[in-house]
Length: 390
Image (cartoon, rainbow, N blue to C red):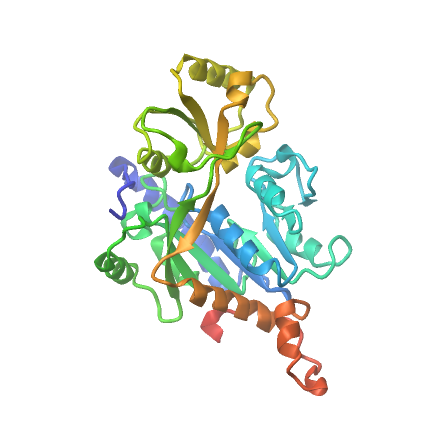
């Protein structure tokens, strides 16, 4: 059921009150204009959450990349959490994971034709991407994990809310996992309830919709996760999830915020699952690799190791893995799927925003093909707008 992963530490609520006071003060400074938010001429779409831990940001950003990359020039900008570098870094296929972080590395490996950059200062990062000195003719910038980065005023602000940790039932840090009060959802143009069970009942949609209590200018969507085929990390052949037999032993190796759902999904194929769980974004060490080798060697056959794409990005460069581990370790890619037949509506909102605000994309050129030649007047340049202003 919704909110089933929430645990509140009641004894920490006084500290949560103090934390909330600081967050509210910061937000108020932005509302009063004491702290400034910048708009940009290039379309900017921000994707993020107001909770600590995974809500499915990376697969949702990847969905946007797939939606737009064949029709306009896309750049993804992240802060590059736990990277071993500073300032602005523009990735290429040879950029090591340690220099840009695991999620940007994963994205660049998947989408070689998309610009992927990291910068803790998102305003500076957007300036660099749109200066035409490093990258030419960027049509849209996707900000990964930037809902709370209020120095940027995106044209579309997408808030992700984990079905299993609905913000309406959670509390502020440190008692709960909210980074800011739940009324921070009012800044979102689009709210997506993520990681929904595929068999969600119509009554549950209605209950959640009412409980979220969104404003009329906000759009609410629901997505679920779909697994693709298991991909060998080093050697071997692709496997379907259905190829996992009931008697196969799986070592589930994760360093993500919420591995519980993945474990539950794998249990549909086999009950013989041994978890090796690390903290989110864990940087694997030589000692960790020795432990993995030992744990896997002790497991009876048939057996395999399953890990996430994000963990694979941190494991791929590690030395010391046994041949047995290398021959049997797989990453499990995930994609999102919109529910309630909402995908086309969502796609049109995103494409429509880019179309209205970019001068270079194929989307705009197709539209301009039907305009008279004198329709390009001064003042029609790209601008950043929000659905609530349409």
